Image 1 (tube, rainbow over the protein chains, first blue to last red):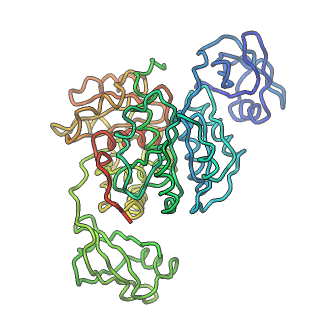
Image 2: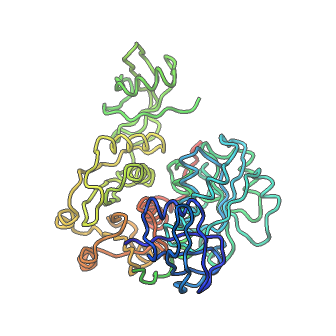
Length: 248
Length: 248
């Protein structure tokens, strides 16, 4: 039986019982036909990963008995992703991939050429939860409401480096930009399809905390650029530098 | 007007006329309502990128006059991607992203746990063409017919390093595996969702030309792993190491 991992809101500790939400109960009981007593894995982003089992299953209610700690909660991810919203299928991919790639905070930003001017925070949140469940991550990234890029930049916290994907070709090759960034707070900014406005890019280039970066000679789709840049970050400055523990 | 770039089969040279295919004619004339005389960009994977213009437009036929060379044909990409087919939306993403990320040859392979046992070569080819048109690439990757992994490995060319994504956690961190690979022929192998069979992975690990690699502690979807690993390759050993020319 493949492991079912679920994200829950409740506190998790040995001996407690957790009521699953209606969607999870439906998935477990009616889609997966998960039998009473069968194992489950639960996490909540705070208390680590827990072995549990289905302890009550009525038509609409499912509860799980929390048994023992499988993995302690790791320190939270400190990587941020700022991105201009794109069309539905591609924004969903950005949220899914950012979750798999260890982003801690997702900040949708409005830029001058943003074709898409709103985000469905509830749907994006659900995608992040599902991706975290799938990829064995023990936290779910926070997704902020959409805000103008200038406001986000205006509030920028001291000490956090902003890597700006500069499609005009002037950016530093990403491997060079990442050298020396390990262990320092960082954020990646990916603009809309069609790129930043020239004045916007000029303003970004003048920020003391920003480094314009390049991802080669081709014009990448926004979702490709997000995954590519985040992967390079993890490989050179993040979690991919260590050999993984055996996961079987 | 945003630039329309089309991949054609015909030879391209100044003064020649190219007949566009039926799909391109429909797209240009009926979707984009491209006026007679308006500019187009053409490439064929052999003769570089050409400025052209729509020179004939009847109900079903569109022809373009080829005017002047914009960019010479670069040397072909020598990066290979071997991948186990996955479900439709995700295999389409793999082909699109591999094209954007500069793969020269795509080899779908059958592994023991491959859930998907066939590929639609025509659809995948069309996706590669569309991605090349979009990302300003001057070639379209070749897509081989599906073959068992053991056969592909049995035929392996001398001197080409095979990076095997090892989800069991035993692989070398990708940045380490890529050190020293620049300029040498390389291929990436990504297994099916659910991973390689243990005996398969053992056999892969024993190949003299193979290096098992890891992409961090989480379980990535196949399409995420493909983009992540290819991006790291380009950043550390490939085309992303140079600053791009200004592309405006």
